[in-house]
Image 1 (cartoon, rainbow, N blue to C red):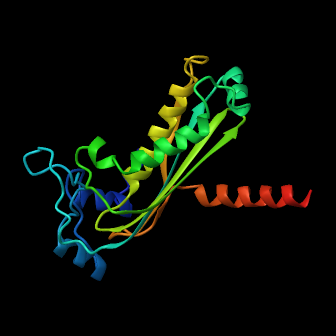
Image 2 (cartoon, helix red, strand yellow):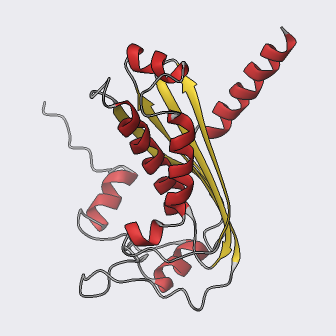
Image 3 (cartoon, rainbow, N blue to C red):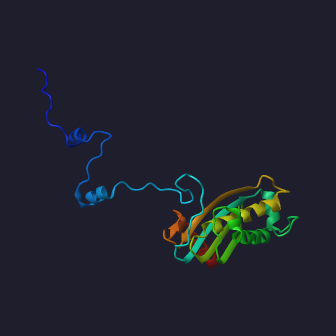
Length: 217
């Protein structure tokens, strides 16, 4: 005897029958009704592009001046020969790290000349650290200002120009030198508030632990 067809449908089948693919399910509850009333969320858009798709310089005249800070980093990968020469300060052109530090600081003040849609800013301070690591030179730049827009580009420019200066100083002995990992780590200030790259807090904690162990030895 043939089995009788199941007449009771699951809740998922009922829902699919009422709202098939391509049709939105009506919002339920107070939160859902509020979202429905507000309409769909606006997609993110680039602030430096106008409605016609042309590049523009954002008008920041109405923004409030706040304390701004940004931290960026990069890495210059060196061959063993080049790294040994930099460590010994034996590169023919002179002090690699010192020259790169000055170049990065100078670049911060010229960011608006290098990046066409950046605003000239009143820079309060620049800290540029270059350290020898097992694979090359690690560069970190921290920039601060009290202005209407952020200093992320200034920090990134400092790192990039310092890294390129290292390359220029060592290219005679290592043309395979590689600039990599130029990225923003942190920013503070402005309407969007603070931002931290994922994993940066853990990395800092590990660095503090290692320094503590080194001092205890």
